[in-house]
Image (cartoon, rainbow over all chains, first blue to last red):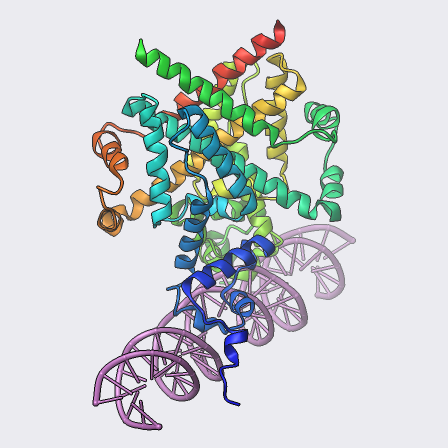
Length: 224
Length: 224
DNA sequence: ATAGCAAGTCGTACTAAGTACGAGTCACAA
DNA sequence: TTGTGACTCGTACTTAGTACGACTTGCTAT
C-alpha cells in the first residue's frame, strides 16, 4: 500500500526541471506572469521547494538566459565567414522570437553563464578567421549584436501589440490619432505597413546583408 | 500664525512635477528603485497623493518614455538626409545614455505618446525626402532603429557593469573564467578591449555609417 | 533490517510594493 | 461665509519574494 505513488505525480524536482518549467511559463504567459508561486503550481509543488534548486529569482533568470543562448546556433566553422555569421544571426533572431521575454534580459544579466561565454567565443573566432584585425573585430561584433538585439526587441514588442490589438488597442490608437497631424505616418501605414503582404520581419535579412556587405568591404580595404 | 507656510516646502504637486521627480530618481538610483513610495518621499508627499496626477505606475512609465522621446533631436529639415539622420541617431544614443533605464521601456510601452508620434513622423519624412520608395523606407527605419536601440541597450548594460565592477564583479568573472577555454576572448580582451584607449562607444559611429552608406547605395540603385 | 544522515519539501510569517477607499483639507468664487 | 472641486493622505488589502525551521524520505553502512 505504501508504495511510492508520489513519483508518478512528482518526478522529483531538479534544477533542470525548474528551469524548463520556468521557460514554459514565460513563453506561454509572459515573463511578468513568472512568479515563484506560479512556478511552484506549474511544478505541482510549493514555493519554498524551488529554493533548494535555484538560489533565488535572479539566479533563476540567469539560468534561463543561459538556456536561451544554448539554443542559438553558433556560426558553423565549415562555412565561409559571412555565411556562418548569417546562420548564427538568423538563429538568434528565431530563438528570441520563441522567447520574446528574453530580449530585455539578455544584456541586463550580470552573471554570464557558460553557454553565453562559449557563444561569444565562437563568434569572435569567426570574425578573426575573416581576417579582421582586432579593432575591426570589436566594431563588427558590437554592430552585429546591436542590430540583432535591437531587431528582436522591436519584434518582441510587435508580438505583444498584436496580442491585445484585436481587443481594443487598435481602436484606441486610431482614436488618439489625427491623420492630418501625421501625414507621412498615415501614408506609410495606409500604402505599405497595413497591407496584408507587409512583414516587418523582412527587414531583418535586409539589414543583416547591409551590415555584412559593409564589413566585407572593410575587410577588403584592410587587405589593401 | 496660520499662514500658508507649506507652500515653501510643498510647491503643489502636478503631473509635470511628478514626472520630473520620477526621471530624477530613475536616473540617479535606477529604474528598480523607482517605487511609488520612494517617489513620494522624493517629492515630500505621501504615496497616494501621486495617484491624483498619474493614474498608476504604468501611466507614469508611459509619461517618462514620452519625455525621453521629447529630448531626442529630430532630424533637422535643413540638412541633407544622411546628415540629418546622423544627427537624430547620435542624439538618440546620447539621450538613452543619460537615461539608461529607458531602453527596455522604449519599445515595450503600448501607449505611444505625442512626442513619440511626432518623432516617428519626422524620421519618416526624412526618409521620404531621401527619395526612398515606401518599401525601402520601411527597411531603413527598421534597420536604423534596431541598431540604435540595440547599441543603447548594450551601452546601458556596460554602464551597470562598471558600476559594481570595482566591487567584486571583475574578480568574480575572472575567477569563473578559464582563459584556455576561451582563447580568442582572452586575446581580444588582453590585446584590445582592456586597453585604456578602447572605447565601446566608438563602434556607434562606425555602425551608423555602415548603415547609412548601404542605404545611400540602395537609393542610388533605385534611381537607376 | 535499521539507525542515522543528507537531500529535499513545505507551513508560517515577514517585508516590500502597488493601489482601492474614503475621510479630511484647502483655496477660492458667489 | 459657505459651498465646491481639487487635492492630500491614513488605513488597509493584495501580490510577490524569501528567511526560518520543522518535517519527510530514501539511501548507506552496519
